[in-house]
Amino acid sequence: MSGAGARAGLKRALGGLPFAGRAYQDLLAGGRPPASGFGLDRLQAALPEWLQAVEQAGAHVRGEAPRRLLVVGALSWWIEYGAALGLLLSAAGHHVELATVPHRRWMAPAEAFDVDRQRAYLAQALAPLSRRIRLHDLSSGAGPSLPAALESAIEQLSRVDVQYTRQREALDRAPGGEDERLLALRTERNRRAAAGALHLL
Image 1 (cartoon, rainbow, N blue to C red):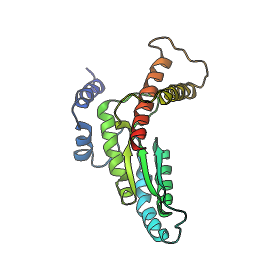
Image 2: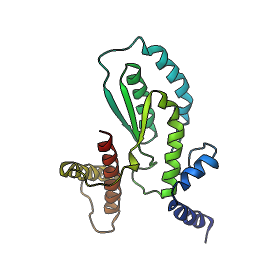
Image 3: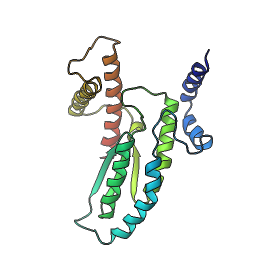
Image 4: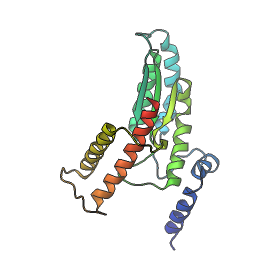
């Protein structure tokens, strides 16, 4: 077995152990982003200055009555944007919550071990925000049955996800085909995120 094959097998085995990826990230990775994940080093470098600016500006930018707001971000650039937007809204006096998902690629499955590591990395990278913003991981939502209207919306959204990724409107729905596998992945992740968001709301 090749070195890559052995590593993949080890990841699959460890992925079945609760918190194995988190333990690896916390104890052995030294805060480095997982190779299979995305890095938020730019955001981490900016957060201390952003938080200081928000603290200084807060007393001068209070506006309307505070509202409870949920900002959602996936992929590194949207998480960066969501963090910045959340801090601005927080400075204006609103109660902000930031929800994220720990997936590097929207179109490729990931080993449970890698997802667990990415979850731990995100929690560490975003921890300074917790002074002003509540943080949530939408990927850990349970899979209960959802309202029929929401299930229908998830099916439509997942199909659009695949059309966008494959850059064509007509999808090949043959069992086991690439479009069908991607549709199953997008549906599962969208359903899980929707369950997590519904729980928050």
